[in-house]
Length: 224
Ligand SMILES: N[C@@H](CCC(=O)N[C@@H](CS)C(=O)NCC(=O)O)C(=O)O
Image (cartoon, rainbow, N blue to C red):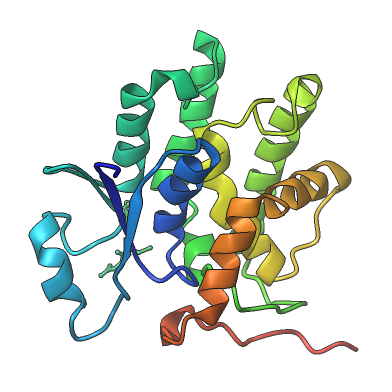
């Protein structure tokens, strides 16, 4: 039995939970998962014991607690160096970390306007200027790294790394909201969507019955 337990939120909605979950699944780590539906009357009481300021994800390693998706990913990368959490070269690691830090501290407009929602399939969504700028920034990052590492594999830095796990919820958002992409970004998106772990996460998310209203976007442009 594994000593690792990952506490996650609703699979349909919890983008921060998906990041370590996806990385752990891709690496074949054995772990228990414990799902705590968010924003219910019981959520705070259920999360209180983990000292995570009532947020998910949380990793339990036996009795040891790590919270915040980036801290969890860094912890796992250190604990399992054989899984190459970060790219091999010093320079690539710095770029991968830059990309992850940018996601962790920014892109708030995307978070608010295009919340992760595996069940949702919309097209022609009405985007603010700021959301379009966030999308342009993300697609330019994907394009840059895919072009640079194209010959080393299908992931952002060629081989799968924490950067791919951190950007996986963006892939799901672009799919849900029908964001049109260039060829390179579209190929990357399809590659992520074809992963068994992502397929399973989305299937499980779609079966959940909880509805978090603030993550249910309905405004679309009507076709002329
Ligand atoms: N920076 C944190 C963000 C964690 C976070 O905001 N998680 C959301 C779920 S995706 C949450 O727990 N929300 C519940 C709340 O804010 O009460 C991380 O990377 O783990």
